[in-house]
Amino acid sequence: QVQLVESGGGLVQAGGSLRLSCTASGITFSRNVMGWCRQAAEKERELVARINWTGNTFYADFVQGRFTGSRDNAKNMVYLQMNRLKPEDTAVYYCAGDPLGGRGFSFWGQGTQVTVSS
Image 1 (cartoon, rainbow, N blue to C red):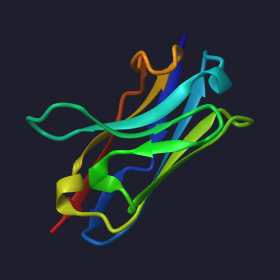
Image 2 (image 1 turned 30 degrees about the vertical axis):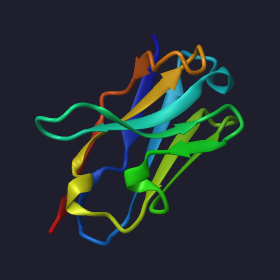
Image 3 (image 1 turned 135 degrees about the horizontal axis):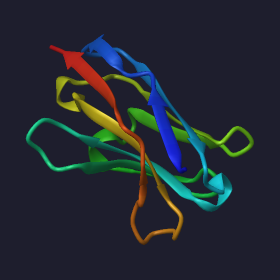
């Protein structure tokens, strides 16, 4: 019964901010590399951020300097603070877990819609 549940998506104007949250259950959270991916309409799913066991985060180039990923192992939660949002950030954002560390995300949430108006 692995569950990843995202929240915090919504509609925001360009330049605004959103904070996404993900609550995980059914996994040994601290053993999972966690991350955020997104998928825009008619586009491939792409990595946004990957957060290792201790919170060190790798970011995709297109969000570098604007987004901040973090995790709270005590609460089984992962976050994505998104600032200076652009219309091209519009997508469904998914929380994901990689229990094997670098071998690919295998646990996925249902996603939360982020829409940035221009």
